[in-house]
Length: 510
Ligand code: XMP
Image (cartoon, rainbow, N blue to C red; front, side, top):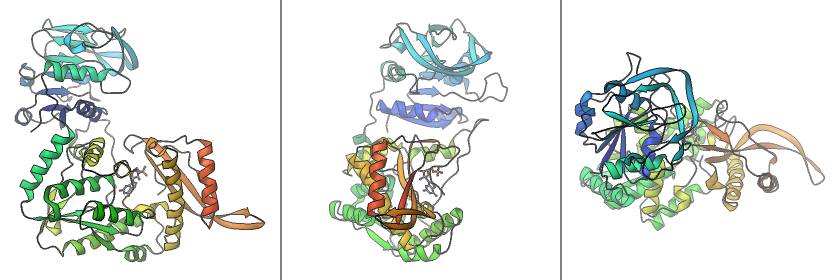
């Protein structure tokens, strides 16, 4: 068990960032909805509690609150924005509605209170609030202020209860992490026991206890999450792991060979590759509609995977690469302005398979998954791979899909990705890929007129794929990629670069 900094989520868009920032301090943090009961919270044995921001106003009678006993001083508590206003409201102070919302950078005048150790006398902080603290009770003192917020940081005089009007978790508060460190390490006494080594050690122990002598089936896709799950479970139970790799025929160039040779030769696994290229292509024949493509691919995948998995009668478990953001999303507290995420479901296996789920990464953020992967011996390029959609190249070939088009797109994309690696740009963009368009255009090659296909290149920067900006790749780079594609890939005579952001466009074209 790791020491826990528990975050009560009141629906702030920044809640996950709080957890990520705390984990960077090697302190385990978990998010639970603010509606959790006092007993549930205490049962988790938190060593500190953080109250997140919220789209609510504490003055709204419907606004979520917490059990008064959490503020008895036995566990250190930090309230951020709404969290602070809630503390003030519950402990005898006054919160008022500002005429104007305060949004943006502010200069914080600090003091030498232990919560603010190591900060400069004036620090940049990020504000985003409509309500503000108008008065605090005598039990509290104000330990920092800004021009617009006289109570920017408050501290209880005898208990370990604190409040921040600004957001220490965002990048616009460059020294915010110092406040978390002061609170958690210096004040609450965390020992920083959340390290990759300690995670791996406890995960291995847990997997062994959970599965005993049973076999575990895993759908390995070659992506980051399933590769790390494979490496971790293999380390725990060796060949009791049955990794199944379905070749849909819609993967990137050479991907099947690379994944096979890495896991079989270097890792010593018995990867079972199911060659289902023709089944997928057959089922997709003549289909152009993106959602139908997705449905067909999802159903075909499940079918094929199930047929293969059924061969292992001793398998009682199905391993999945669920990561922490998936878990949070399914339990998170939805405030009035909650955004609705669209889910891309491809590999969800039917319950009728009667396997129990094992999800060893469900506590981890993506960056942590990558670190664990490297620690387990996966190569850098494997753990730093861009996301790749379950339906693969099928949703990057606009219109219907044929084997020839898949090969064409694989060759185009391989050049783009190779050049990104060579120029050191691959790790600087969040996702990059190519799209094959269903049109022909005129060109000249030597003395000949051509009438060939057009492709588009797409590279975006993003945090989580929910919003994205197109990446400003250097012109020289684009020139080189375009010229290589047109010269080396027969059948393409025009290359475009996609300069649309999400929203209103999406990252994929379908
Ligand atoms: P969009 O196109 O929705 O993409 O802006 C956001 C992220 O999701 C990936 N994506 C998918 N992933 N199945 C997946 O597993 C899908 O059907 C799918 N569609 C989009 C996309 O590559 C990007 O990273």
